[in-house]
Length: 392
Length: 159
Image (tube, rainbow over all chains, first blue to last red; front, side, top):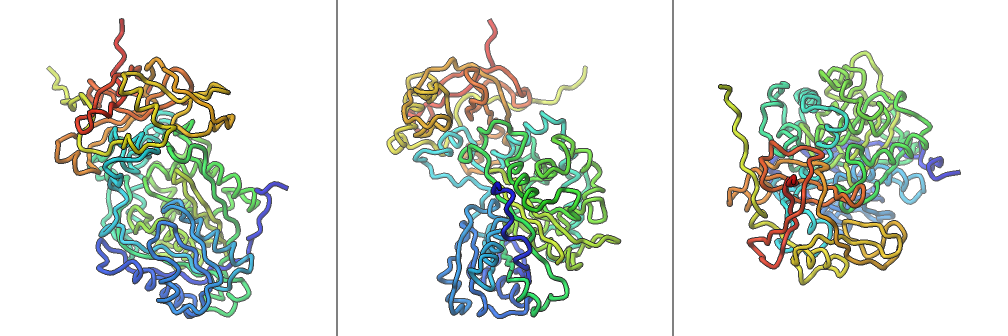
């Protein structure tokens, strides 16, 4: 028995509530208030009181700690708490951890959340190094001007294009499709539809990445509530049980300086995918819709390949023209508009959208197709995480 | 005569006003890189037991777990493994000092497959940089901290 064969969380946790604040460029309020608002909204959706929450799973990067959350939400006894490292890398992973806490019986109602003013306060897309760096990966990158995620990931994208012949137009079709989905989503920050020409004519930020390849920065918060399938039967969405079927995380080698990995045209999430499919005893053909972590549009292609939907280098034909990844296409993809056009909440909105698709309440609900099982996954590239959720 | 699109200006030296290593606060297992660059040499951390080069520097060899290493001089020859051209600044000094565009290149050194440095390639328009382009090292002090010398690369001069 290998670790990858064991699936201890399978169908033992139910997603019963999702909630969020409005998304904005400047929320005008504290991150703790955003967290409380999103968690309260998720509790309302589930039909529970915040007083019933007894588990918290944070993003390590989140400024809101357990102490003030317990205080603010009036939680009488927090039985379980944990945080998952990083920002985007913790997306999906927090959902897997929360499911684990429920499966283990550590708590009855667990919330995972992300709340941040990522536009009006800390902007992760800007250089954040100190003026003099006391060693580590940054000190071997920043002095030559390599100072932001877009620089590291641009190196992957260039190499990917070189190896497999993908072009900026392929990435453009991803951008056009995500924006179209956002144009139908009342929560989305960027709703104005774009064309492939708009993408191609948008400012070159870091060649080979255009402005319209890069996710936005914004303020906002999102939260997800989970409990046991038995408790879920008494809650608001009891008619549509949604279960966590499998989860996985993976890092790849050379995690501190990802640009030194052996092959920059392949995402580290090949490791994550291998474990995920082995645990779930499923494959890409079992998936009805895909939520991928879209910090940069090319990672749609890298995800499709890393998670086994296509052999390496062949996703470009699938995304070409956009129709296959549209909400009414062969594989509805990021039907909320993603980080790119809905909101950048470090991937938690992707799992929320997976829940909506199964409930049948997405603003881009695929017509004539029942969504029973969704993969929410990332290829961040430092590390990645994925969950499969399904109709119970 | 066909009009040629105008190319961007080449980089000629280190960027100014951006973060640099704090030489007096570096971990001991990184210092050799910067000391040798100051002396005009490119030296890469090399395991004394399994003889593999490694970069980024680490206290322990990730291959054989030896703690013994030295700083081994390399030829400074290599090729471009991947590159980007920065046309929008993420740091105020890039904008204020009119330093756009600039390139960032991953240089794979000839000594070992996958042994790469992050650097800039000088004396070439960014439009002319390509993957597999042969390059050689050169050393230039930074304007902001003249004691910090950066290994940089130029297109290989053919004999």
